[in-house]
Image 1 (cartoon, rainbow, N blue to C red):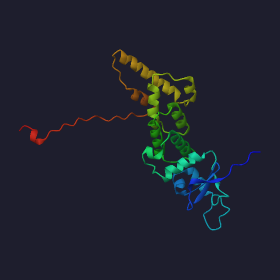
Image 2 (image 1 turned 180 degrees about the vertical axis):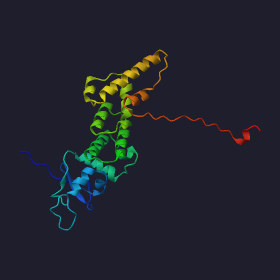
Image 3 (image 1 turned 135 degrees about the vertical axis):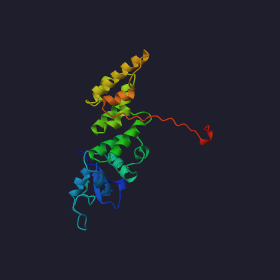
Image 4 (image 1 turned 90 degrees about the horizontal axis):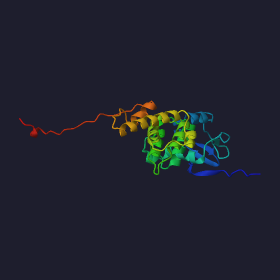
Length: 240
C-alpha cells in the first residue's frame, strides 16, 4: 500500500496575512485573493463558493491547512510560476522579468489557459521569451503547446516563419505533433516560399517576401511602416 504524500507548506507562497489556502499536489499555498479574483474567472467561481471570512470559519474551505481549496490538474511548479507573475512583476513587464526559462514560459502558458487568465499580455510575453531563448526552443513544441492554450495566432508568426523558411523538410514525427489546423497552412507557406526561391535563383522578380507569404497564409495582417528620408537643411545653408 502506497503511503499518501506528506502535505507541506510551500516555502515561497505561504503568507501569514494571505486570505486563502490552496492545495496543489502536496503543497499548501496561502495567498491573497486580489489577483486571482481580478484576472481569473475560474478563481472567481471557486472563491465565490467560500463564505466571507470571520472568526468562526474553521470549517470553510480555504481557511485552514486542514481544509484547503484543492486545485487539480495543475503542478506545483505551474502554480508557483503563476504566483511569480502576480507577486514579482506587473502584467506589462519585460518578458525577461516575467519568465526566464523555456520551462517557465510553457508553464505560464498552461496555467493561464487552465485558469482563464484574462490578460493577453502574459501570453505575448511568454511567447516572446520563447522566441528569444538560446539555444532556440523547438518550434514544433512551441506551436503544439500554444495551440492547446489558445494562444493568438499573431503571437506565433515568428515560429511559423522559421518553420516555413527552414531548408530541411518537416519530418513525419513533426507533422504528427503539429496542430492539425496549422499543418496544411505551414505546408502551403513552405511551397510558396520554395517557388519564390526558384524565381530568385532565375533572377525573376518576386512580389512577396517570405514574411508576407506567412502572414497572408495565416490571415494575419502584415503591418509595414513607410520609410522616411530626413534631409537636414539648415536655414543658413539655403542660398538666397
